[in-house]
Length: 214
Image (tube, rainbow, N blue to C red; front, side, top):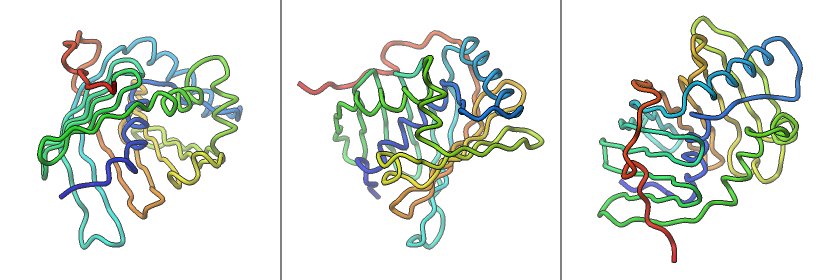
């Protein structure tokens, strides 16, 4: 089974960014302040993260959910690896501006998505991140037993025609991500649940090796 990689690529680099960047909002309530403070500390504390991932994909057109299992590693906000083992192998790499997807048959799609990456990073990183995030999303938050939950509904036209909303859950203990839900415009909803098994380890360069466009 093949998936539409080009239309789903934003989901994967959003996933990569959410693993290693801070979440904030222009709102000033106590819960957002707690999340912002905790995530700032986590961003400084954890430089790399690896673990396992399960994606549950649903759609009105699917008889039953599609469940994908794999592993991931992230380093900073520009280097990311996701590899699915089942039901069909697929390998995804992000290194700086270059994005590679290797799916059925072993053919690799090579894309330069530096502009997309910089736009998303502007909402989550740097001195103007709070202002930019407020401009790009409407955000609601809640505190559960094990996690903090944030729902982000895009406001900007650039984002609205790509997905309906994102739901991020962060572990209350260390502010590392527990899951990321993406409700797509195509009618496909994906929830990524991850188990981070190692942090701050030195990763081999080949972990994020990519092909580059000429």
